[in-house]
Amino acid sequence: MIGKDIRIRASGGGEFDCYLAAPGSVAKVPAVVLASAIHGVDGDIRAIADEFAAHGYIAAAPDLFWRTVPGPLSRDDARAAPRGQPRLERIRLGEADMADTLAEVRRLAQSNGRALAMGFCYGGPFAILGPARLGFDAGIGCHSTQMKDYIGELEGVTRPICLLWGDQDHAAPADVLDAYRSVPTRMKNVEVHIFPGVLHGYMMPGNAKAFDPHSREFSMARALAILAGLRSAA
Image 1 (spheres, rainbow, N blue to C red):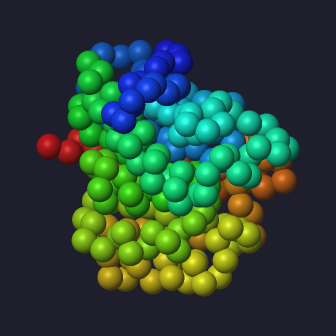
Image 2 (cartoon, rainbow, N blue to C red; image 1 turned 90 degrees about the vertical axis):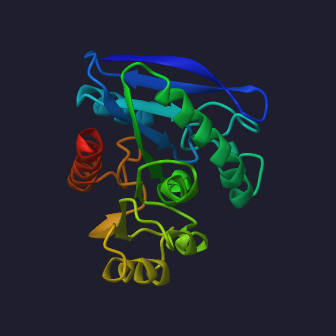
Image 3 (cartoon, one colour; image 1 turned 45 degrees about the horizontal axis):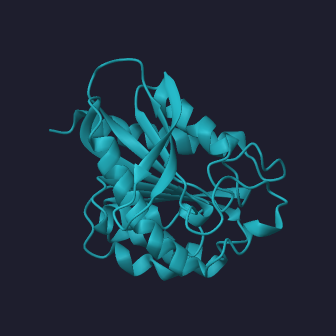
């Protein structure tokens, strides 16, 4: 497994940083592009990328905040809340960065051309936006935020999407969870998992109060299962 920092040329001009982890084998495999939480590409995100690479997949984590406050932030950093722009505007701009990262990983010799968008917290909407309109083959979102604004994007999407929250997630109130709970009954490509007693940020060991190893293990298993499907898809 090899992890390194690279630069990606943005389609709208400029360049942004991206952490890239690749498996040691030469087999052609799918990729996962990680859309980070508001804290950016920190140690937790890099560790997740490394874990995917250890399982034999390409993993890329772009800096979605390079236009305003680039780089990772500590969890108590006062800059973490604003990051320079309203959230919906940041996500809209980040769509191009996710698409540019997807194009970059597809150029790798190891890529089989298929990719999963995996979002956390702030990056969660890309689990839907990725397969809905950015060219990704599937999406998975863990403790995603702002999701009430994106439920309509699911309409017409036939690619696999998996969404996971804790039922004690302050960023996903009951009305949001209820709205998404009903989706799998009418869309068989969408799965929703809600963990009892689990808080916002359960995927991240750096968030000691919320980290839940069992929910994280389940979420990673779902992501790996989706990637295995993308590996074997014709």
